[in-house]
Image (cartoon, rainbow, N blue to C red; front, top):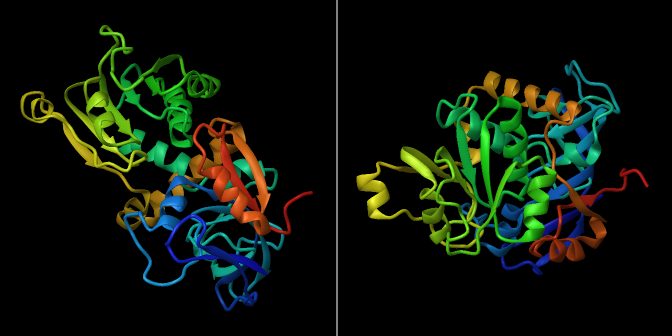
Length: 324
């Protein structure tokens, strides 16, 4: 079975390898992976620029959708053919074997493309909206990169909760993507902040995917005592707020990383969170567009496509079991 192996030395420094499927032991499942997402974090991993750097060769990929191919002894609640998402990483493979407790079961009719993107971006959006501060219906949040997959899911989940969103993007094309996700208040920021109306409502909470000066511009749209959450570094620069914002306005700057949330959160809370996300997936509440799918054998072209700005959606790798 095919897999992508990388060394963290650049986008072009990866190769296709063959791996042997492993039969499941007691308590395990063997999965046939159908589609695997290429996220910005995966590209940073390939370049050796992510916050966590593997010491040896590794298989990239944080999320995927799969079908149960084989069931080990003492496993209940799963049947061969069930649609699932694997919770561990190293997903750019066509098969993996792992404990059944590390698998989330999905409805049989789940949209495969959206299911492949369920683990990371919708969960990040949902947890940040739920756990950072006490948001109530009618409150405002503001975010940059609102056309990103996380941004679009923030817009969708916030609307379900009655929370208003000020969506900041960098171009007309990005604005169209945000509006397609349901954004009602969209601002195109050319980097000067001049295009943001001075009478725009201030937010209790801000989500920053860019870092650098973009964080400071975002902080200007947060009320005194509010919080700016950095969850991405698209600019490659550290987030920053001015001394005025931190000292005299009392803003808080904090980070969010879904991997840390997994490590710090009770298993039942994680299970309940993904239970809700699975329900929302079936209802069509969450989701983001897919720009293209590529067979895993064409991963180099897929990576280059994923690295392009304003590509119009996520790029997915597909395995041999992907519907033709």
